[in-house]
Each structure stands twice: as structure tokens, then as C-alpha cells.
Image 1 (cartoon, rainbow, N blue to C red):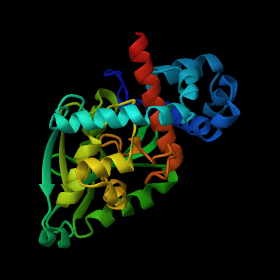
Image 2 (image 1 turned 120 degrees about the vertical axis):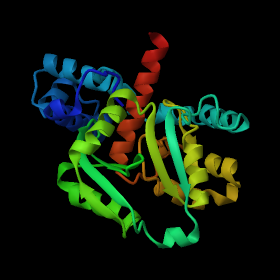
Image 3 (image 1 turned 90 degrees about the horizontal axis):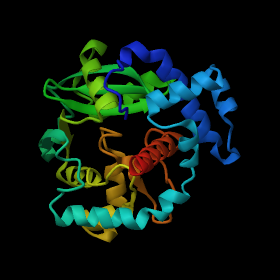
Image 4 (image 1 turned 90 degrees about the vertical axis):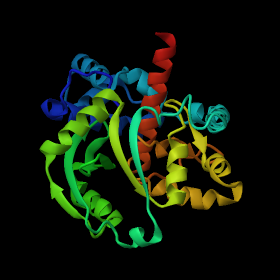
Length: 289
């Protein structure tokens, strides 16, 4: 998420596209330690202008981002991340939790309402540029209910994915409406953003647990299951995590296998690696600031 509040997403679509392409290239080729010049070439910029544009939009330098792409750091932080998660639950999801940052309206769906598949709901959607590719934002009149990512060519598939969550809802396209959400998500970290979260009682518990994982930390599916229910429920917890409708803000990307493996991500493993690296780089920058 961006740190600068004076950059309008709609005004910097081309810049987002260039940096998002470079982020993907670096995340896919991190093992080869690509140079600044190679990444700049992908972005279609000179190294000087690429360094400046990347740092402005991402909040960290390309070099710092590449340094955090290896998951070795994430693996070593698993234990501390699980400790933070335990502390957050012991405190009732206060403290390091992001619950206080999001104005959540939680709709725990009954079996009957779940079966209705969103009948009677009017959902507005729009596509917007982001550091992680094209973002699909879906909202109700009350607040944000869906956030996903993909490539420009995947717009239809992204929308189909959201439609499958609420198959009987009416979807209306209005990027003008969702632009306000894009500004708050990508420029202000989602603070104070109204969110309407639909899910079964079990899913809601798992998604609330995800909100307790701070930026720059990771935890495991096993730890989430243990905190929500029991270690034996790891598979069920994983399924609920995979159905998280509001990616990035409800940080399912911060959950790894117990051995530190990425183990998939609904919007692509490369995107998950990039999100983790960017958050880790920003967390380190804050420590040294």
C-alpha cells in the first residue's frame, strides 16, 4: 500500500503499470538477482528515472525490494509472527490488530442467507491500477466487500471470480464510484475504510484472525487454525483463507506453510511473494528511519 497521499491513482495509471511490471519481473527472477538496469528496461525507463519512480510509488528502493524477495527472512520470522498472533488473541484482537484501522461491518451469513447467493444485493465494481497489477474493487452502498488482483488481460476472469461469490447479486460497473476506495486503499493503507464483510461464522473467525497479523510479519496455517479452533482444523482454515474476499487489506498473503513455503495464493504466488517482500522492506525501513 502506498504511503503518499498526494498521488491520485487515476492520474498515475501508466506509472503504476510500469512499476507493477517491474515488480512482477523482479518477483519472478529474484533468484538471478536482476540488476537495476534490467528492471528499468522492463519498465521502459532509464535506471535513474526507474529508481525515482519505483521509490515514489512503492515507498522503498528497488534494491531493498529485491533484497527481501527471498523467503528466507520470512521463514525465520514465522516463530515471531505466531507469537504476535497469540498475543493479539490473548488481548482480544487489540494491540497489533488492524481491526481498529478498518470500519468493519461484519455480516455473518446464516445457512439460509448463504444459499441466497447475494440475492437482492447491488454491487458496484471497477478496475484500477496498482503495484500488484490490475485491482478489482467491489463495494456495496455500505462499504468495500471485494478486492482482487490480476493482469490487464484477466479482467473477465477476475470479475467472474467475484460473481461466483455472490452469484445472484446485481453487478454494476462504475469506476468513478470505486475510485474513492482505490485512493484510500493504495494511498492511505485502508485506514478508516468502511468494509462490509460477508461470510459464514467460521470464515469470519478466520478472516478476523488474519487481521491480527501485522505488516512485515507472517504466520502459518497451523497457527491460525490453533487460534481459531484447533490444529486439526488447518485444512478448513486454509479453505476459509482461500475464500477471503478482500485481499491485501485482510492479509491472507501473510500466511505460509509451517516450513515457510508460499503454498499458493488465490491471485498468484508471484503476487504473494511481491506483497511480502514489499511489506518486509517497508518494515525494515521504518526501523532504520
